Length: 122
Image (cartoon, rainbow, N blue to C red; front, side, top):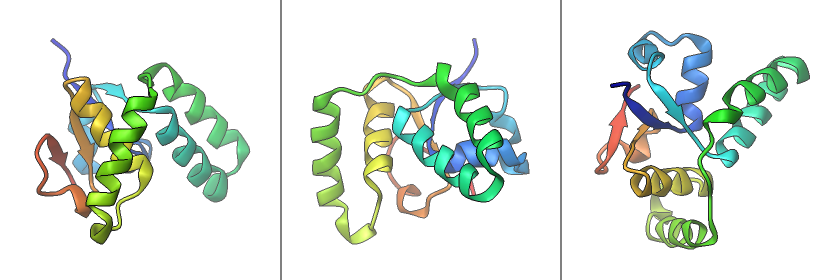
């Protein structure tokens, strides 16, 4: 059985870069959100240009899971609760979606290091 994780933007970038700590996850089934792809596209567009940004956006597009209004509301409440940690809206949504779909949230973002249901890899 193939392992599945919810990859946040940090994890997606590490996979693209070939980060050695993320190598074991390169064979896992990737799930992410359209919002994470938006962040990824922006970072790649800024750093590498349109061709690379579009290439990876399209590559990961089949990996997205649906986002509904209730997910947005719950993630917004989470962001408010964690406001001192300065987590992004996108990360809050991703964390909630991972939980909702029974996936571990794969990230290297320190704000999530000690939370339940997180696979923290730096």
